[in-house]
Image 1: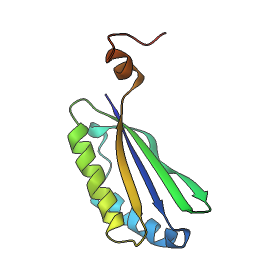
Image 2: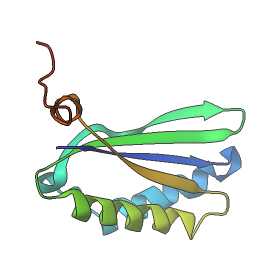
Image 3: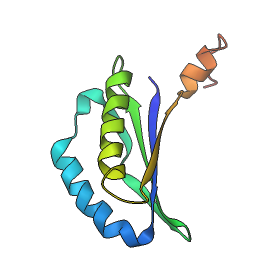
Amino acid sequence: MPYLISFAKWPSHKTAEVMKKAIEAFKKFPEDESLGEGLVSGNGIKVTEEGVRSISVTKVSKGKLEENYLRGQAIGNLYALGIDGFEYTLEVWSTLEEAYGSIGQKPPE
Protein backbone atom coordinates (compact mmCIF):
# COMPACT_ATOMS: atom_id res chain seq x y z
CA MET A 1 0.00 0.00 0.00
CA PRO A 2 1.24 3.52 -0.76
CA TYR A 3 2.63 6.18 1.50
CA LEU A 4 0.74 9.41 2.12
CA ILE A 5 3.25 12.15 2.86
CA SER A 6 2.26 15.52 4.24
CA PHE A 7 4.64 18.47 4.04
CA ALA A 8 3.84 21.71 5.84
CA LYS A 9 5.57 25.02 6.43
CA TRP A 10 4.83 28.16 8.37
CA PRO A 11 6.59 31.33 9.54
CA SER A 12 8.59 30.83 12.76
CA HIS A 13 6.66 33.55 14.56
CA LYS A 14 3.45 31.54 14.00
CA THR A 15 4.68 28.43 15.86
CA ALA A 16 2.62 29.09 19.00
CA GLU A 17 -0.52 29.32 16.83
CA VAL A 18 0.41 26.10 15.03
CA MET A 19 0.90 24.26 18.34
CA LYS A 20 -2.46 25.52 19.60
CA LYS A 21 -4.09 24.42 16.35
CA ALA A 22 -2.40 21.00 16.70
CA ILE A 23 -4.23 20.41 19.98
CA GLU A 24 -7.49 21.27 18.24
CA ALA A 25 -6.65 18.95 15.32
CA PHE A 26 -5.79 16.00 17.59
CA LYS A 27 -9.15 16.39 19.34
CA LYS A 28 -11.13 16.78 16.11
CA PHE A 29 -9.24 14.02 14.25
CA PRO A 30 -8.15 11.38 16.79
CA GLU A 31 -5.70 8.77 15.56
CA ASP A 32 -7.37 5.98 13.59
CA GLU A 33 -5.06 2.98 13.25
CA SER A 34 -7.40 1.36 10.71
CA LEU A 35 -6.30 3.97 8.16
CA GLY A 36 -2.63 3.03 8.21
CA GLU A 37 0.64 3.00 10.08
CA GLY A 38 2.25 6.28 11.05
CA LEU A 39 5.91 5.90 10.07
CA VAL A 40 6.78 9.49 10.91
CA SER A 41 3.93 10.32 13.23
CA GLY A 42 3.61 13.41 15.33
CA ASN A 43 5.55 15.02 12.49
CA GLY A 44 9.24 15.45 11.94
CA ILE A 45 10.13 19.12 12.41
CA LYS A 46 12.90 21.19 10.86
CA VAL A 47 13.63 24.86 11.55
CA THR A 48 15.08 26.82 8.64
CA GLU A 49 15.85 30.43 7.83
CA GLU A 50 12.55 30.50 5.92
CA GLY A 51 10.49 29.23 8.86
CA VAL A 52 9.45 25.85 10.18
CA ARG A 53 8.83 22.76 8.07
CA SER A 54 7.20 19.48 9.05
CA ILE A 55 6.74 16.07 7.49
CA SER A 56 4.36 13.24 8.32
CA VAL A 57 4.46 9.82 6.62
CA THR A 58 1.70 7.21 6.78
CA LYS A 59 1.79 3.77 5.17
CA VAL A 60 -1.81 3.58 4.01
CA SER A 61 -3.93 0.51 4.78
CA LYS A 62 -5.41 -1.37 1.83
CA GLY A 63 -8.52 0.37 0.50
CA LYS A 64 -8.01 3.46 2.69
CA LEU A 65 -6.17 5.85 0.36
CA GLU A 66 -9.12 8.10 -0.48
CA GLU A 67 -10.25 8.28 3.16
CA ASN A 68 -6.69 9.09 4.27
CA TYR A 69 -6.28 11.75 1.60
CA LEU A 70 -9.57 13.48 2.44
CA ARG A 71 -8.71 13.36 6.14
CA GLY A 72 -5.30 14.88 5.38
CA GLN A 73 -6.93 17.68 3.40
CA ALA A 74 -9.34 18.40 6.24
CA ILE A 75 -6.50 18.55 8.77
CA GLY A 76 -4.33 20.69 6.50
CA ASN A 77 -7.18 23.08 5.83
CA LEU A 78 -7.86 23.41 9.55
CA TYR A 79 -4.36 24.88 9.87
CA ALA A 80 -4.21 26.75 6.55
CA LEU A 81 -7.55 28.53 6.96
CA GLY A 82 -6.75 29.55 10.52
CA ILE A 83 -3.08 30.53 10.35
CA ASP A 84 -1.73 33.16 7.98
CA GLY A 85 1.32 31.84 6.11
CA PHE A 86 0.63 28.14 6.77
CA GLU A 87 1.00 26.04 3.62
CA TYR A 88 0.83 22.28 3.10
CA THR A 89 0.93 19.61 0.44
CA LEU A 90 -0.18 15.98 0.38
CA GLU A 91 1.68 13.52 -1.83
CA VAL A 92 1.05 9.85 -2.59
CA TRP A 93 4.24 7.85 -3.03
CA SER A 94 4.63 4.22 -4.08
CA THR A 95 6.30 1.67 -1.86
CA LEU A 96 9.38 -0.08 -3.25
CA GLU A 97 7.28 -3.19 -3.87
CA GLU A 98 4.67 -1.17 -5.79
CA ALA A 99 7.33 0.57 -7.87
CA TYR A 100 8.97 -2.71 -8.86
CA GLY A 101 5.56 -4.29 -9.43
CA SER A 102 4.69 -1.55 -11.90
CA ILE A 103 7.40 -2.94 -14.19
CA GLY A 104 6.55 -6.57 -13.51
CA GLN A 105 9.46 -7.13 -11.13
CA LYS A 106 10.07 -7.84 -7.45
CA PRO A 107 12.55 -5.80 -5.41
CA PRO A 108 15.91 -7.45 -4.66
CA GLU A 109 16.14 -9.22 -1.32
